Length: 314
Image (cartoon, rainbow, N blue to C red; front, side, top):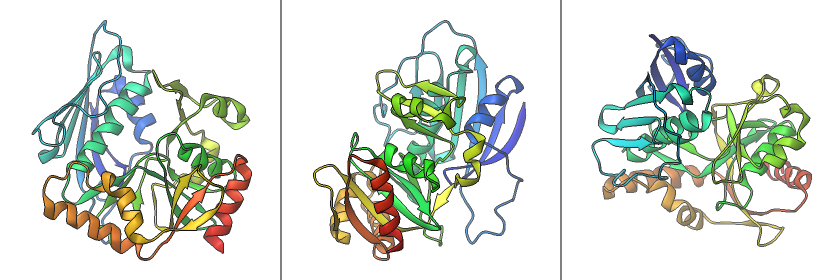
C-alpha cells in the first residue's frame, strides 16, 4: 500500500491505495503534492481520507442512484454499483472505496459514480462548504462561472473555451470552501463529460482516454498532456454566466435573481437553517462583486466564445 497526498476539488486528500490500483489514483487525482504543501495559504483546506481496496466480483457495474436514499441525513452514505462501492462517513471526512478488479480500467465506476460523487456528497453535507452546478473558465486571466440547466450546453461551452485557448477549471461541479478568503471556486479540470460526436471531431483528442456513460449521451474524456498548462484547480470569477437557449442576447441579472437560480445547489444537503444562511450569505457577497449575465447561446460555438471574451474584457 502507498499513501500520498493530493488536491481534489480544493480538498487536501490523503490517499491510500494498493500498488495494483495505483494507476487509478494517478488518472483520477493527478500528480501528488507534498504533505503540508498548503502551509503558505491563508486557509487550511479540509483533509479527506480516501482509501482503496480491491476485491473480485463477477457482477457487471450498473449506474447507482444519483443520490442514494437518505444521503443528506445518514451517518454513513453508500454508493454501490453492484461491482464496486464507496462508503462515505461525512463526520469523519472519510471515503472508503472497495473496487472490483474488473473495474480497474473503468473510469465511469471509480470516477463519475464513486469518487467524484463522494466528494460532492461531502461538500453538500458540510457546514463550511457548498457546491454549484457550474463550470469555470478563464480568458486572459479573467474568469467566469458558467451555469445552466442540464442539456443547455454548459459542458460544450466550457470545453470549447479550452479548445480556443482559455484556461479550464471544470464543467459540471464547482465547490466553494467558505473559509478560503480568496473567493475561489474549486473544480475538477482533469476530465469532462461531452457529446461523443464533439470528442470525435477534435483531432487533439484522438488518443485521449474516453469512456461512454451508460444510459447517457455523453462520454468521459481525460484531457491529454497538451492541455495540461491550461487546466486550473480553481477560478476566482469576475462574472457569472447563466446560459440559455431561449434567446441569443446577453442580458443583465440581479444578485437576487442569481441566488434564486442557484438556491437548489448551495442549499442541497443543508438541513440546518443557519448553515443554509451561511452559504447564501457567502455566495451573495461573492456575487455582489461579479457581473451577472443571462447569456443566450448562438448555434455557432466560435461566436459564443468571442462573446464570452468580450464580456470578460469589455
